Amino acid sequence: MMLALLGSLSCERCSTIFKELIRLESHMEPTVHPFAELFDQLGLPSAESEIRAFIDQHRPLPNGVKITEAPFWTPSQARLLKDLLLEDADWAEVVDQLNLALH
Image (cartoon, rainbow, N blue to C red; front, side, top):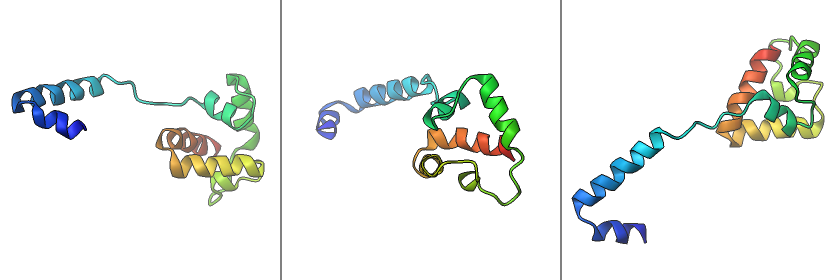
């Protein structure tokens, strides 16, 4: 459908549409999830002081221990972290940040 529509437009009009799409895309906010949202997803307290306390309590993770294999996660929390790392780039970034904070 979209190809048929673009095919019916002049090359100049297509160029204008593509330029506008690129302009709009450049103004889009990147999707960044803060720690609080990740902690909410994990079913953990998500106030800033509670997040700091969690990190202080569980760090440092020994070298070689993946965040998804840390002993303090429930099985469902570990599974969620694995899924976020494998399937969702937006969430993977904040999981990586938590990993750094815990190591």
